Each structure stands twice: as C-alpha cells, then as structure tokens.
Image (tube, rainbow, N blue to C red; front, side, top):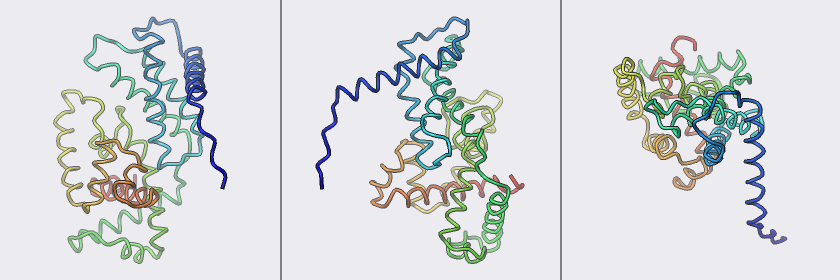
Length: 269
C-alpha cells in the first residue's frame, strides 16, 4: 500500500485564497449593483468560511443533485447581497443577517430541484398517518419493525421513506426566512421573531420541547448535538460510536417523528 504524499500547506492556502477571490469577484460582478455597501470586500472575505460551513451541513445528509460548487456559488451570492443590503441601524448583527441570507440563498438553489415526486409524497403521508393512528390507538408509537410490517415494506425501505421525508421537509426545517415551518422555527432560532410573533413562537417551542421529550434518549441527544452544538453527522457518529450512515438514519427518523407530532403531514403537506 503506497504512503500518501504529504499535503503542501502553502499550496493549500494559496488554493483557498484563489477560490475565495474568484468566488467573491464572480458574485460581486453579478450582484454588486450601485448601492453603497456598509460591509467592505475584506469583511466579506472573512465570512466566506460561513458559506462553506452552511453548504457542508446541507450536503452531509441530503446529497442533492446539485454539485457542492453550485451551492457554494449560491451561498456566496447570498453573502454579497447581504453585504449590499445590510442596514447597521437595525438590531441584527451582520453575522446573523449574513447567516440568514446565505442559508436562504442555498435553500433557494435547492428548492429549484424536484426532491420528492408525487408517488413518494404519497408514501410519506401514508407512513405518517399510520404512525399517528397507531400512536393514538395505543398511546405509544409503533416500533420501526411494526410500522414497516403494517406498510408492507422492509425496515430498510422504511428508513428510506424517513430520509425522503427529511428531504421534503428540509427547506422548512432548516430555513430561517419568513416561510419557516412549525418544526423549523422551533428547532432553529438564528433570527429573532417580531414582537407580534413571539407568543406563537413560544407556543411552538413548548410543543416541540414536549415532542422531543418523547423521543428515545439517543434521538434526543442527536437533536441537541446537531441543532444546538452544530456537530456534523461524522462527529456525532464518533460520539455515538456508530456509523455515519446510521446517524443519518436516526436523524431522519427523529425529524419524521417530530414532524408527525407537530402535524406537519396531517393535512397532506
């Protein structure tokens, strides 16, 4: 087995600097506009790693048909537009504002793709309804094996349904724009809700807290590690001492369970 050649640190740094310069120039040319920006080019460069971080968390478990470069480009455009539109007189810090705009740009790029065909939507709704009906009937959620048996599918296929449901809900789950879903608005709080929305937001957080409390211990830990501690799937796998693929399955199952509890699929969404 051949020993891999050592990485040339200087070359890597130069490549990263070149990438940042090219991305910044491309986005600025496309969206620079004539409005004077409060954030200069050097400050924009400092926030480019945030683009890569958001994209990395996106492709970790969705595996979209778009390339990573497509998403990085979209996120960089979002960063440039944030620098152009940022109003320092508002309460939000630029870091928070940029985070929201970058993520929004990445999500917009993802929304342009057709994640879930109608036939898969039907499978998701059937699984959600059956899980809800069995839970209401018995007072306890069915096991994966039982749910799969009732649906006449294998457990492996059931987990694939969970993962497709996660893809369907991804835009709303990880979105921080005005269109955030019940689950997304409670799991993520990067932006501060308007005063008129705070009471509703508090109710949603309370409902979500109750739903999370009903998950098993490992799934509860996963939610905390992923959404609060912002660990990657790979890092969580190391903590749990299981495979990254298994972490992805547990993550998909947890989100499916939470979505059902909050009624995400109860009206055929």
